[in-house]
Length: 69
Image (tube, rainbow, N blue to C red):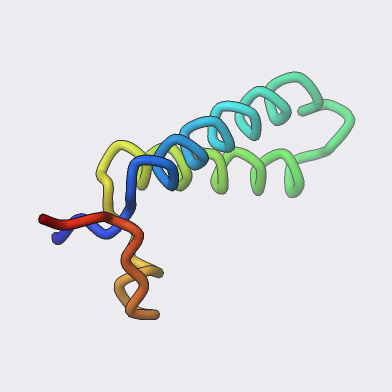
């Protein structure tokens, strides 16, 4: 899979993933299963795409934030 996420994009995804997982863990009882589970899923997707450097949605939409030489 080609890298299509730039450095800033990956950093934002990393921070967003950590924040969403933290919120899900902290507020799980108050959010309930559906909203808490949704936060976990979105947080994990953000972390995984951050580490991979590639976003499948970007590939479908033809977006590339990665600077190539």
